[in-house]
Image (tube, rainbow, N blue to C red; front, side):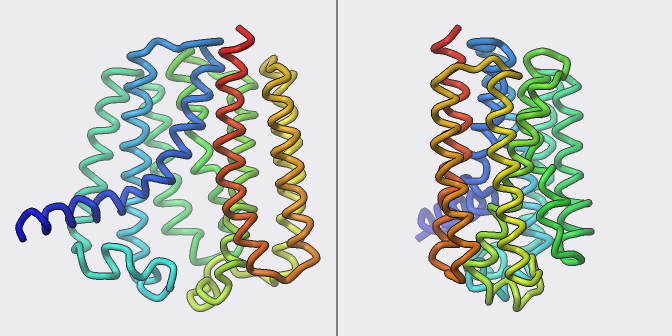
Length: 289
């Protein structure tokens, strides 16, 4: 019985960290590091940046769960999370988030660079203070205003390798920032009752679908702009074209169909889009050295 309780506690702490969200951040940061190094980055820098970054993202997610535990309890999608379900106390989630943020910053500052640590700290503050505490419950445009918070990993990965910034990491930042609103809005449409009940991400739905189109076109444009800027090859170009076509096709379909199923497909596809797109950058850089 005691072993089962311990296992349950660990899985609940892992749930606070949101591993799937962490994975997306690791993919974008890792790809940026390979682009910055024009091949394999130093292994120690790669490992410590990804470990420290993963802890910082996990901290952001855990603190977000702590702050949003009230609305999580009112949504079908989130009411079984550890805090609203009562499997962990709010103080435990807060302590978990603070401790792993401290460890993450320690790793980044001591084993990577102060610049990378400062940027990771800025991303954490932006996500928790600006987005979660200030904007999320106040405006339906919070998905846009907060999109930058999740776009920091490529910048962190780039600066960890080079110590400087250039145009390329900002294009990577823009790709993630432009990806975030259609990703979130597709989820909001597919779970419209949940989001309307707590007043999150709510704007007239027709307008939301139109803005998904706008951001989808900007996203595809930014992904293609990376080809000449980062000197990527045909492997990445082909992946970006195919993935972009699929994204736009689903976004256009959602524009003309009031269909939760299509919104769910766009939401799921957007995750695959980001992983494969950044994976293609990494592979392209290794193939066309």
